[in-house]
Amino acid sequence: MSGSSANSIRPLPPGLQKVAIEELNEVPSRVESDIAALKEWLQKQPHLCACLEDQFLLSFLRGAKFSLEKAKQKIDRFYSLQGAIPEVFNDQRLVDNAQVLEIIRLGVILRIPLEGEDTGPAVTIIRAGSYDTNKFKFQDIIRVGSMFGEIMMLEDDNACVSGYLEILDMSGVTGANLFALQPQLLSKFSAYADEAMPTRQKGIHFINVPKAFETGFKSLLGWFPAKIKERVSVSSDPDAIFQRVPKHNLPVEYGGSKGTMKDITTQMEAKLSSYRSYFEDCQHFGTNDKLREEAAVANPEESHFGLDGSFRQLVID
Image (cartoon, rainbow, N blue to C red; front, side, top):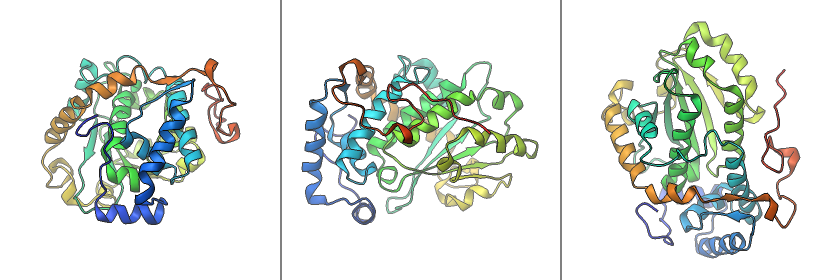
C-alpha cells in the first residue's frame, strides 16, 4: 500500500488520538492485538478474500468503535455489497483507466486538504454539474468517488476518526444531470457507504442549488435511507459552503486561498497512481456465498440488502 509497509500502523496526531480514545473506544496499547484478532478471523473465513493490511483493518476497527464483532460484519458487508453493485465495482476500477483519469482531471470530485491540527471531518466537494452526461454515466462518477473513498479510509486520519462531509455543488446542474442520476444506483451506493464503509458520513450538503430544482431535490431525498436524510441540507446560498469548511482550506475558485482546483486534481491523480497495486489486488478480493460456513452475521432487518447481497427495493412514498 502507498507509503507504508504492509504491517505498520500510522500514528495519529495528538488531537485525533484524543478523539479516538474518547469517542471510538480506542486503547492504543491494545490496537495491535485487536488488529491481529481481526486478521486471524479473516484468514479462517473460506467465503471471504480480503485485504489483510494493518491500516485497512484498523480503519474497520475504528469504524466499529473497536467492537470486533461489528468490524467483522462491516468487512464482510464491504466485500459482499461491492459484489452487489457491479456497475461500479468492476474491471474499470484501476488507476490507469483512461475514463477514471479523465473524470479526475475534470474536477468532478475534489478532496479538500485540512490543516495538520484540524480534528474535524474530512471534506470532499462533488461538482455535480461539471461533467457531460452524454459522455459519462453517473456510475462512472461514483466509481471514481468510490476509489477516493477507499484511499480516504486507508490514509485520511480525519475521515477514520471524525468521519467525512460531502458538499455537492449544484452550480450549472441541468435537467440532464438530474435525469442521469440513476436513482436506484444512488440508493444502493448510499446504503453501501452507510452499511459497509468504515468511515462515518457526517453530512451531505447541497450548495448552489438552482431555485427551480429545490422541489425536485426534496423528492430525490426519498431515495435515501432515513438516517442519511437527517444529515442532508439543501441551500441555494453561494456562501453556504463557508458554514462547513473554513475559507482558507478551499481552492481560489471557492473564495479560498488553498491553490486552484487544478492543483487539487493534479495531487489527486498522483495520489491515485500510488495505489496501483492496491486497486489491482481489489480485483481479486470479494465474497463467495457458496463457501460461507455460518449464516451471514448481519441482521437482515437492519440492511437494505438481502443476505446474499441482492438489493432490496426501497419503498418510496
